[in-house]
Image (cartoon, rainbow, N blue to C red):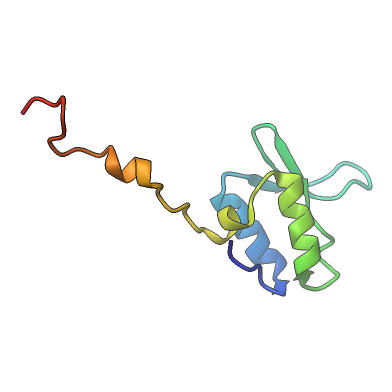
Length: 96
């Protein structure tokens, strides 16, 4: 698992959420905060006037959005041995 940055700019947060399929930011009604949405997931955005987003708040936002740290960082899962062994070649029981 990768490590989250200590500080993240709000603009970078929004850009990454968009890359992961979220839309927005959408304006909240009344005193509700801005949010981003993706199908059945919604994540509330922190106040844009309070500076950078710390690592702890970022972890909470990812949890709320149902996103893993590796997904956030763009790390692809390593293939397992069973996946690499089943990808072709002429083994027993194969014609050709």
